[in-house]
Amino acid sequence: MPFFSPSVETLITELNKMPGIGRKSAQRLAFYLLKIPKDEALALAKAITSVKEKVSFCTICFNITEEDPCHICRDGTRDPTVLCVVEKPSDVIAVEKTSGFKGRFHVLGGALSPLDGIGPDELKVKELLARLDGQVKEIILATNPNAEGEATALFLSRLIKPSGVKVSRIARGLPMGSDLDLADEMTLTRAIEGRIEIP
Image (tube, rainbow, N blue to C red; front, side, top):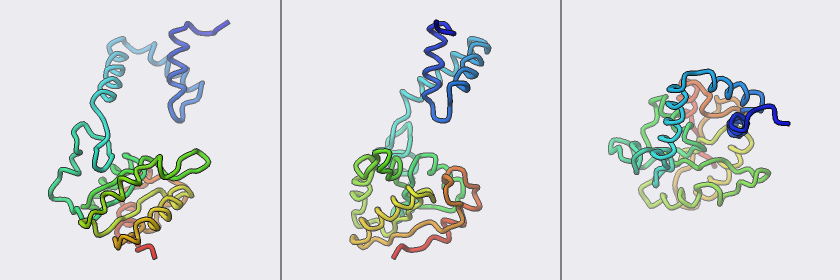
């Protein structure tokens, strides 16, 4: 016999699909949503619907945007000769908060992880290589400092180096095993400023 009504059970099941949300957390969120005023719950539902309808990926850099191309790709004051390659859109935000990077971005959509079935074809690698049209002089590999991020950086450097484009890796200073979007601005600024060329 189910413990909850079908509607509540469906809500718990959907919330449980979110990353980091276990069954108990999903139940707490479901009961929170039941407790708040109807207009607040509907505002949340409207925000979710709106973001799914309006937000997409930039066709140039694959960052999230409501306009294509995104505001960074359209910004004529940014240096088109330097591309910072990151794993996910939240990494773009982390780098932008430093105010220390004035180039453009390329979002891979993840990192190589054979155990999870993520190979080069699941990432925006071909699209990155297509951007090496002679204008780009340097690629900064700002993948996360963990096993998957390091493997992705090494893989990309081997692909890019034959093109003659300078390939650098953000400097250490970010703790191993953490994510870029969790780093403070000063640490990330120093990591970008102290980047080194990959031999």
